[in-house]
Image (cartoon, rainbow, N blue to C red; front, side, top):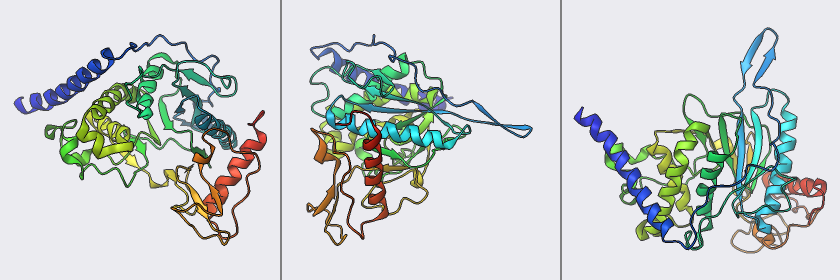
Length: 359
């Protein structure tokens, strides 16, 4: 009894602690957090049937809903438009047995934009001014909290994705048996930062290696589990950002660590799938992967040699298009450039050629 009581006491203590920190952050802001947001302006894409009949047998299809958070910046918007184009095309190609359900762009700038009719969108409120301390990614967990509380989500699972993800083949529901499914990041190292993480994941909870080396995306997780994880994810993110030691240790991946900690606090472990996605230019072949994540710049000379760290004679870098979308018909890379980069540019070109009113 004593041991079990201790085990329950510490998770409760840490949850209450981060909640109190969050409360103090929120009430010290100029604007209170508001949660009375409208539902999406139109129904999401109709999901496939929940069962697939094959002969005399039925196979249960476990649908997941794809959700992407974004601001209304030009930079985020063009990526979302390209991402949604490929989501629709790949889902259609999968046929009636697909487990890819609906899609929502969670727009966390607090007001509708001009793409509400093009992309199924839920409008969420941003954090109060100054709360994110310039780290705008903190709006992501807060936006998920609002969406999960207010939206009518038909599917039982959620795929958390990002604007700079291109789906290259139908994604099955990789989560199973109460486990989530996630991509392992080499730079998420719980053991290395055990001293800092013990503030948020106390020793009584178990070894620090219980914290998976993941971020919040790409992750497929049960909807009900995510409803529990999301508020903790928000609280831990805000608490870490207010903690100079954690802020210095985790930097731009702080919110990723916060999700990994929150998932562990709620007892949700993840099956790690290295084949979930590739990241050009480091990953050179698409192979059997499901997603291209184009977070890194791709720089090459005209002989097809990678010149990473130096602007190449040929380049594709999403950051080159922070104030204006990429033009249609981008120049293809020179011979010798890896298949992953060639595929990436082809996919962007196809999307921009077919999306109405591009640019």
